[in-house]
Structures are given as C-alpha cells and as structure tokens.
Length: 256
Image (cartoon, rainbow, N blue to C red; front, side, top):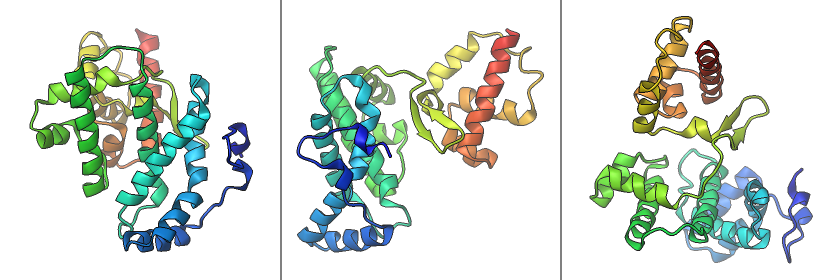
C-alpha cells in the first residue's frame, strides 16, 4: 500500500477506517435523511480515499497537511451531493470531486496573475460544472456549461485555461495495471487538435493504418471527441482506444 508514503499531521494513516460498499450505501442514505452521525462516519470512513488522491500531488512541493485538509472539503462536498439511488460507486463520484477541490486550491495559490473578471468567470464555470455533474451524474460539455452560464463557449474555455496550473501532458491519471491513461488522452479541444492535424501533412502516413485506427484518429482529432466518447462509439474500452491511438500516432511520427 502507498498510504505510509504520506504523513499527515495528527492522523495515523495506517489505522484509517475502510468502509465496505454496502456500508457506504447505507450511511449515504442515512446521511441524505439528515443523520449527522452517519455523515460523520462516512467522512471518517473515506479519509483513506482522500489520502490516495493526495498522493498524486506529492511531487509538487506542496504542504501535504494542507492538501489533505482541502481534499477533505472535496470529500464532504461529494458526500453532500452524491445520489445514493444511482447505480454508481461513491468513489467514482468522490475522487473527481476531491481532485477538483485540490486543483482549485492550487490554482488560487498560483503565482501567475489572472484578471479578476476572468477568474470570476472560471469559478462560475467550475460551480456550474459541479452542479451539472450532480444533476446528470456525468461530465458536462463546455457547450452545456456555457449555455447554463449564458456566455460564449470561448469565454468559458479561456477562463478555465487561464487558471489551470501547468501540468505535463504525460502525467498519469489512471492505470488498471496494464494500459495507463495520461492527461493527453483526456484532451478533447477540437480547435487545438484540428489546428495541429491541419499543420501536418499526414495523409500519406495514415495509409498503412487499419480502418479502426483511422476512425479513432478521425473521431479524436477531427471531431474533437474524448477517448471515453470514442470508446462508446467504436465499442471498445477507453484503455484500448488509448493504446490504439498511441500506436497509430507513433507510426505516423516515424514515417514523417
């Protein structure tokens, strides 16, 4: 286990409680009904989940105690907004909420100066995003966020990008023990991807790709879809999409 690699002041990380899924469901239902004791038990029983997220930020030079406290805020928000009636594990909903809270904290402490109006737009967009996730139990599109805010899509994109802390495109975000998915795999900005592909004379290089590889690249970089969306359309897993996309791009680069 990785939990001993992060020391949190005042918390014995080796003795953190781990709740079974059935226990979480029962506690979530009781908490939704107003049971404060159940809510507190849920918080205590998911601190190890917060710790596992905090570990992803150990190489950033940040105070781990501060990040842990911020992550706990994200956990509480997840508990208060999660719908236990949906057939989704709590951790599936909670982890993005915890990560989002930590990233907001890092953005607030970013040394790069961003105008007040743009920062306000970005924070509104993040609040709307969380509201849409709570309503639909899925990631909203930029168009959906912009529509709810009644502002142009471009304003939302620029504002969110302005407050994002720089991160490597090859930072791993998920691994199932086999295929690792990186930040670059989650990028779905059609304007950037299209510009990049338009600048490359790659038509000759793709002639040796399979039909499925061509379709994946077309959906990803010409249509601007994420790997999750491509996986659903093609009928394979996101990990397979990631592997096929990387292999195809590597072959194109070598041929060019």
